[in-house]
Image (tube, rainbow, N blue to C red; front, side):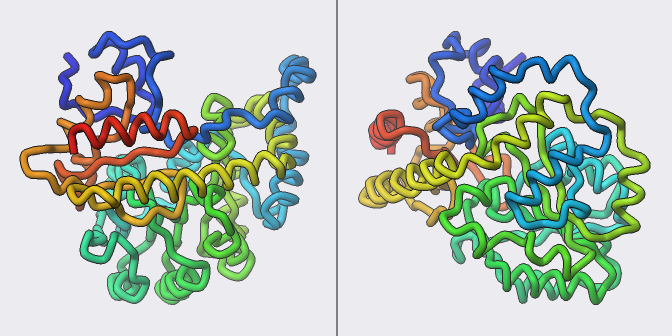
Length: 364
């Protein structure tokens, strides 16, 4: 039985519809972190014109898809492992590495720990602090990396804090991991929303460090969660051989594989997305900062974390107030290192964002 205080994933519109009696099409998905522009126009028309690819089996090695990802990211095609979404790849690598001890930067996406617990990995937390705006200090993280650590998990930009570290800072961590024979798994799900991706993406480090695993997907930036398409960049030949040998054949549909050869070419769509997010990020955060009962943590990607400073108001209260008006935000009280005074929402179009701000200011 669902209760109003239950935590909802950004895709749980059916649950919200069931509990609140609001049709899912009337709910604005501020918790989903998905690109408000929707599918790339080039991808949409290409899928419509090439729907017959569904009648063919996909290439088991996904050569065209890997070449398209190579052209898009600069990663060697031989270092690219496609998968059925980032979530599947997280499971795949954790099960392949089977770390006895894992260091996880918190607060963060819960899927990492779920999969680590499934293999009974000992989990050590590195918890970021609100006093430092949830920014990661690589030196402090490196102090926890020793020969007992097999895997370090980092989301960059991080969900739910919308903070990031630079490629040079990532290299500092990668070196420390390498010295201790540990893997560094970096989830870059939200990296493409950043105006200059090259400043923070670890993909250029993959060829140099064979202990780095970079994960990306198309659910958020390319607004295609239903495709279930993601990819990993890793140069560890032993690990790659193992994964190719033990991977399920045709885990990516022919339609998803084809989509991947198209979507990464739409540069205009990418720039329009980044321009919209930068615009809304600036306007919305400025409007909220003007209210003294809200702390806005500086966002680097397409969502923002807020701390409620108003006495007597909790994240559950704000969620309830917003959802009753068809606006679904994220109650962050169940994230490690946060609590009942934190909420998160993503930036949508100007009309929706203005509506959300006005609704938030009614209660905060």
